[in-house]
Amino acid sequence: MKNITDSFVSAGHWPSAGSFEFNTDILATNPINLSVVLGVLIFFGKGVLNDLLDKRKQRILSTIRNSEELRRGAIEQLERARVRLRKVEIEADEYRTNGYSEIEREKVNLINATCNSLERLENYKNETLFFEKQRAINQVRQQVLQQALQRALGTLNSCLNSELHFRTISANIGILGSVEEITD
Image (cartoon, rainbow, N blue to C red; front, side, top):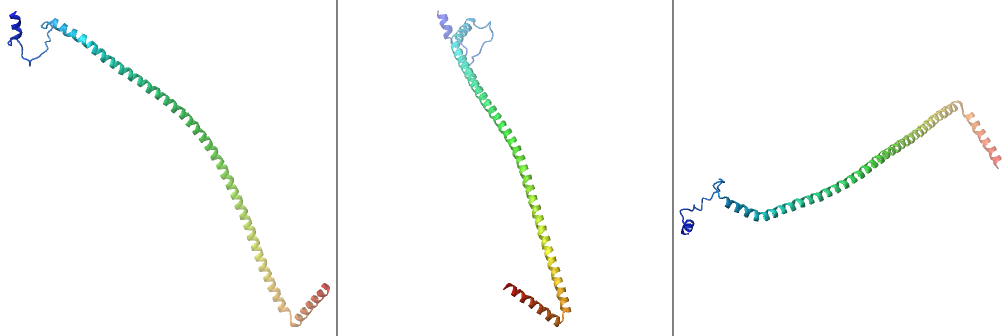
């Protein structure tokens, strides 16, 4: 037994602590040590691996649920946006239709107002022409009358002598005297 303990205690047989290596030669390794190590890994690692896989599975499921909720929310928002878009399109069509109708009404109103303004201007023009024509006619009449009176006065002054002038005045006084007697 001394042999067995000596072999463990002997420093000559132990490799130094700094030279740890894996032996990749399967035939040179101890299959029992390998089976023990694998067994320990499987026994203790199974729980750890199951925990890791369960946690990963929960995270994936949580991510999927969140994604589904986000997807549902996005679908709801998309539907609301579509409804709003339809509403806005309908309003735009109404505005467009009303706008065209309003434009046509404004156009007709503008044409009517322009026609009325042109008619009034035409009437003002005609009235102005009539008044100017009347004024011109009156001016011509006054000038003709004034010239006729000047000619008549000139003719009377040249034809009348003092005796004829005296007789005309007397005749006019006599006419005025007879008119006075009639009125009394």
